[in-house]
Image (cartoon, rainbow, N blue to C red; front, side):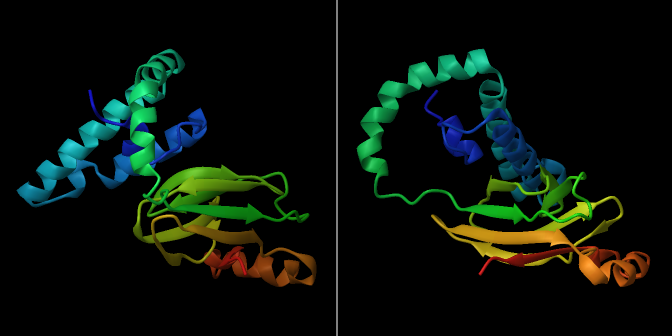
Length: 192
């Protein structure tokens, strides 16, 4: 088969199993045939969904992934010179600060209404995205951040920062706001 499974999923050959799973969940949700109403789009989505599923079935199993990597090393080295002109897939980087509030809890990272990762205090997560417009939000329990819109272009790395709205003297007012404006519990912004 001539398909490049890493390219189909939009991950690097060095991607971890967690990265592959997160990307599969994101793409399978985006291309699920039931999301499309017209026959033409539904058929295209169904074909892409099958390709995504085939790629995940191989790359999610360490033994099959090793076999796939071994059989595609020669083909990949021959195509490498032609790929040097192409830009890498876009990705987002989200960094979470360390604050006392919520330090033991993980934030759910939601891209286009799909939970793609979790983020713990003091950590960062890098997620590949497809080129185009996307929506990004963080969630924790019934609360979250405001939704941010961003455009991803080939080769672009878009950085975000996040944290809890329960920092310092804002704790009392933030606790009251939890029940009125649940999207203010967490903050999310593009990094400077």
